[in-house]
Length: 172
Image 1 (cartoon, one colour):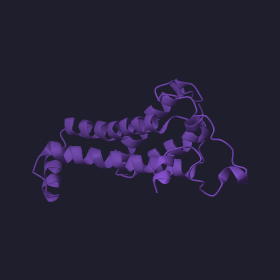
Image 2 (tube, helix red, strand yellow):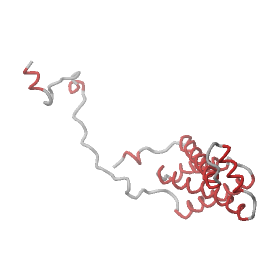
Image 3 (cartoon, rainbow, N blue to C red):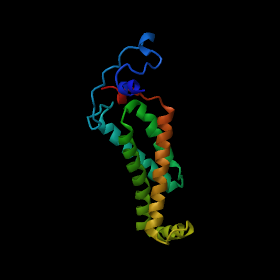
Image 4 (cartoon, rainbow, N blue to C red):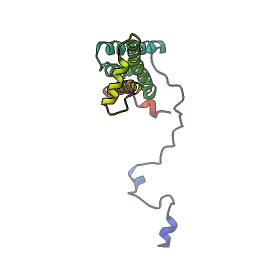
């Protein structure tokens, strides 16, 4: 019993299945640490991707004005599919899609409210019907949040449908 206690933690004292005898060698040395803030190389010029972001905002604006509330989902889906070519990190892509969705819904809401349409009153009623305090700002924030969620779910689906390289995250 005391001999077993003296062997605890020592190399080779447990003989779990004799792994070395089966052809399994020593462990590989750990790979070098690569911090995540290191610049990631993506494909294509950044100006082209910013143009795609602006086009996405305009598409969501046009969809919101036409009553196509699902346009944020479609633009998020297209962004996820286009990332097969772009190779952007998911964190960066999700932030860009979030900005695209919120701007795409906020611009037409503000534009129509400035034209004198009763969006503030409608937002107040929507917030009250949702069981929230009857606040116009809360109704607008809820609308922007729903557009944001649609775009992020579309992005998730687009990334799930496209094969992406995992070696970017695993290689040193």
